[in-house]
Length: 303
Image (tube, rainbow, N blue to C red):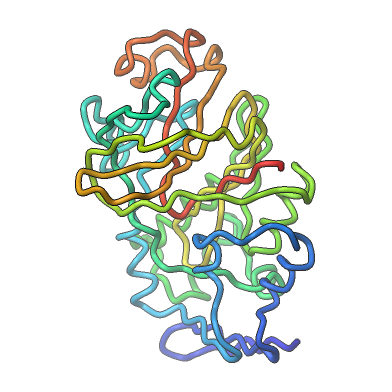
């Protein structure tokens, strides 16, 4: 297969020409994970068709500032709403709950984000040809015609720096800039006998009821969160002391959906100052703390 990277004068435009019906990223998935269905959240990030243009236009870059990601890791920083300001009584903190609530009939008011800004995967060869480092920021901004010191530039820099930060104690982390590299990291951590699952719930704030049996699907997982960037980048980390569940939800109109819940079974090393403990009225290490995974994020578990 051949890939042709062509610059466009007004805005840098990456043109990908694929010579066969299946895209290389999809072929790689089928080769490495032949028994693992690809979740919709990942399939939607592949470019369809035999000849596809991946354009880093002004509209795509501007969309970074509208990318709705209000999820941060509870043992590092509490959920933020709408940007960097913790809200003790807001819908984001309401999305945390205790493990004992995870059963049929429980009613919850939940907030689910929209799917990200539409930034799609690049093939590994293309992604690896583009710098992804805060030390190369001027070059990266120039490639994508992003103005230095603009809101978009600050978002891109923040994403790169978060990827460069060391993981917390006991955490193995990696930022995947292609679907192929995401697969490689996951299979290195969990092996190839895995399943990939994601939340598929309408965006917004609604009252939900757990509408059926809750199924635990894994005690060891790799969780991948889509980041704010001009092409698809996932912050992946191998978690310890967690359990993953598939949860059937029913909204007030009777519409059924499914969501992935992550329960942190050991919070003894979390800061007692985190707002989540105040909201749930528990102390570190006393009870499992759970939250639903946002739309567009992926959990990998061993079969």
